[in-house]
Structure formats: structure tokens, C-alpha cells
Length: 125
Image 1 (cartoon, one colour):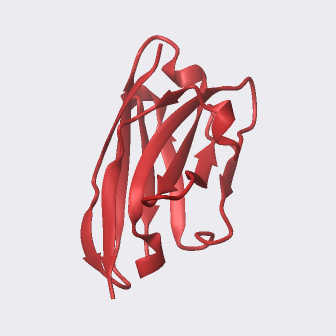
Image 2 (cartoon, one colour):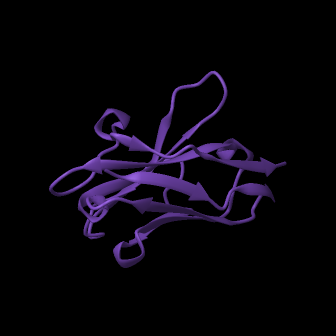
Image 3 (cartoon, helix red, strand yellow):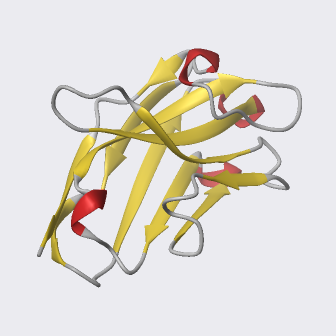
């Protein structure tokens, strides 16, 4: 089974950049689609970006399209989220998740069975 650990969060100024990493373990890791979600206090967890297990298909929330980029390196069991042109509205805890899908990807958090513990991203005005 997949176990996920996020890293790379921090405090940045508006317009700055961060690169989040998610490292997984377990024999089935490379057969999982991967996603990034984010959550603020009192709010539901929202979709940010996702990538198919081959890396051929990616998807993004409208709010981050053109600013964020998701990628993966299956040999290293790692998924990345490059975040550029950050805005205060991007402030949240960011979670990495894994979904068992034969192809494609999903925006639905219910499709993801494994979750990391999250990493805090704070963007100052």
C-alpha cells in the first residue's frame, strides 16, 4: 500500500514560487494516479492538480491553471507541484494523494484512498 510524505511548504511573498514534493513508498506506487489538494480551516478539501500514473495526462483547477505544474518521477517514487506567481488565496495546507486508476486521473477526493499529512503554504500580501 502507498504511504505518502509531503515537503517543501513555507512562507513566500505574493508573486513568489515554491516547489512541493511528495515521496511515496509501497509496491503499488507507480500504478497510482496522483493528486494535490488543499484545505483552509473550516473549509472542504479542494482539488488543485492531478497526474495519471504514466504521467501522460494532467489536470488543473481553474484557479491555478497556467501558474502551477504537476510532474512525477516514478523511478524516484516522487510527485512534484511547482507553484509560480503565488497569491494570498493560495494559502492552505497542501495534501498529496494517491488513487488506483488504470488510466487517466480524477478531481474527486473520494477517488483517492491514500493521503499524506500535509504541508503548510502561506503567501503574504
